[in-house]
Image (cartoon, rainbow, N blue to C red; front, side, top):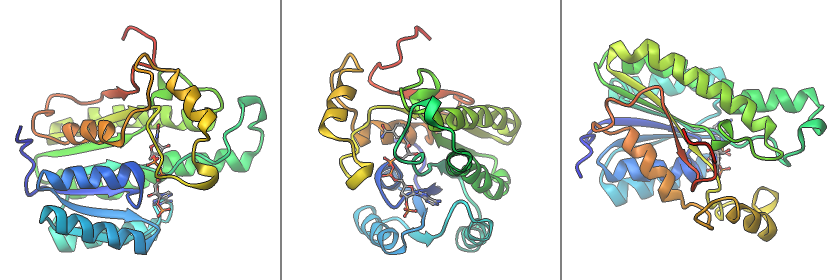
Length: 258
Ligand SMILES: NC(=O)c1ccc[n+]([C@@H]2O[C@H](COP(=O)([O-])OP(=O)(O)OC[C@H]3O[C@@H](n4cnc5c(N)ncnc54)[C@H](OP(=O)(O)O)[C@@H]3O)[C@@H](O)[C@H]2O)c1
């Protein structure tokens, strides 16, 4: 199926690894020119080179931090100068502070501030700068990566769930305000996705992986492609009448009917 986004321009934040990187690849495979943004400059440049070579699109690596206003402003200026504007904004973020703890043990103010900034404010700061670059074009797509924990909170995830819920609310408000400009805004809410690309303390232990497999009727972890496919669809022409929604990619973990 032709998704009708060939030649569009997408910014994918937090794209030096994992879901962000894979969403950039998936959009580029549809002929979308991509801008990659994360802090690890070398990784970002290598990914941009791979994407340009694999898909024949423009791939710009712009190293920076979503939490730094000056980095985000410089990114906006670069997109305006190089592409004249933006069509697709993928708001991916880093993970909540590690290790995760039970809610009653989340007593440190600093961890709550870190989670707020990392999971919510950074994405809002990027959106504030990028939406003016999308608005004049009569068409646009905003897709935020949140978490299925907004529907069914997972144990030890309150630092994530609280701010993912905030992001979900933000996207709903945004959808109501930008719809008249031809822009949709939606969330992809994953859970139990294979993250074997991660190493060290950030990776799941074999026991954690087993426990996660048991949380879904499918009895397995989801693949990165199963998330990136949904994000890419929400960026497509065909998804034009979906806005303000959260699409679960959770292997059926959330038990509610709707
Ligand atoms: N896997 C799942 O089952 C699952 C479920 C629900 C939600 N999620 C969420 O999906 C998102 C992506 O997950 P993942 O597994 O792909 O994570 P990951 O492998 O840890 O990658 C996180 C990315 O975020 C970037 N990043 C972190 N802080 C940043 C900052 N301040 N500014 C710019 N970039 C920043 C990192 O790059 P640099 O270090 O280079 O900046 C990296 O590219 C996370 O928010 C995660 O919580 C995942």
